[in-house]
Each structure stands twice: as C-alpha cells, then as structure tokens.
Length: 218
Image 1 (cartoon, rainbow, N blue to C red):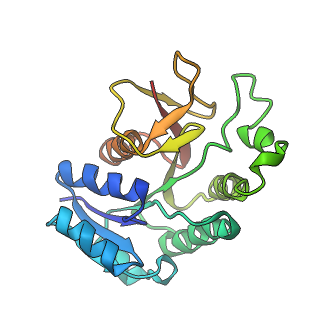
Image 2 (cartoon, rainbow, N blue to C red; image 1 turned 90 degrees about the vertical axis):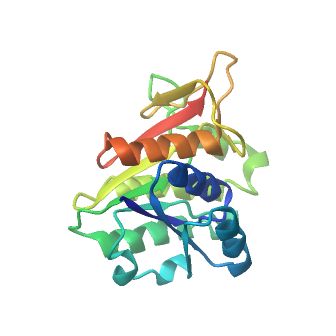
C-alpha cells in the first residue's frame, strides 16, 4: 500500500488531500503542529496516523517508510519566505532518493497567456492593493525557481488558478503547464477538492517528473 505523508494536513488543501488519499486507499500520515486540529482530523478519518511536529523538524527517519510526501504547508504573508526554506529542507532530506515529493505552489509563477511574456505575479506586483499579501505569490514563484534547479530529487509541483478556495471537486477540470487557466466564463479558480483530486491522481499515475502543472475548475 502506498504511504503518503501530507505536510500541513489540517489546512484547507491538506484536509482535501487527506480525504482524497484515504478514499483512494492510501495509507496516510497527517503532519501538523496543532494537536487539537490533528485529533479532529483523526476523528474524521479513523485510519490515518498523525505526526505532530513542526515541518522543519521532519527528519529522514520520519520519511523512512513513506513513498510520497506532499507539501501543503501554508503560512502568513509576513512569513512567506518559509515556503522556500521548507522546500529546501525537504529537498535536502530527499537528495538521490527515489521517494516522490509534490509541492502545492501558487498561481503567480504562471504566464498570463500563451504569449508567455508576462507572469501573473508581474500583474500582482504592480497593483498597490496587493501589498498586504503579495509576499505569498512572490515566494511561491521563488520556490518554483528553486525547484527547477533541483535535478536529483523526484519532485513535481502543482499550481492552482488565480483564486484558490475551499470547495468541491469540479465536474470539469482544466489541466495545463505554465499558462494561467480560465474557464469559459473567463474565471480562473481552483477549489481545494479539485486540487486534491489531481494531486492524488498524479501520485497514482506519475506523469510529471521534475516539472510543474496547473489545474483549474472548468
């Protein structure tokens, strides 16, 4: 049985990932720092194992029996640099390993259209109203830039649409590579359950190696 470690399991994306992984028959270790939230998750999903530990304290021994790690870590904008720091920590643990690791990235690193001349983050950075939260897409962009230079770790990344929100899986899921996806209403949105469905599908199918793809609700 495939064993998954989900980092940030009690967050919006993490909860959806746990649910999807369990429904696919995977063995799940749910990582987080808040014991009350982890226990509540365990009450909802009886067969999971909880790992109460700061993600930065995860060691090689924690990963020994794990097949796939999913980094769904999230933090406040004023600590957004931790996205890169955690990616670096996990990559260091997995150098020259066959274990897979998936990273939930942001939409800022996606191009705005097929001309591939402008990133979504370029638009965010020129809008003064984004100042309170723009550090998050900025650092998620840098996280992907870092990962693209990692050649001896079996990683993949997934970016949502511009709006990443809680919600059920879409009946029509759009999939792309490096360009922001929009539906026929010109809306770029990804629900957490849509994201989780495609991440777990990737865990099963292993189509993306050392690259990023993007998903959105159709």
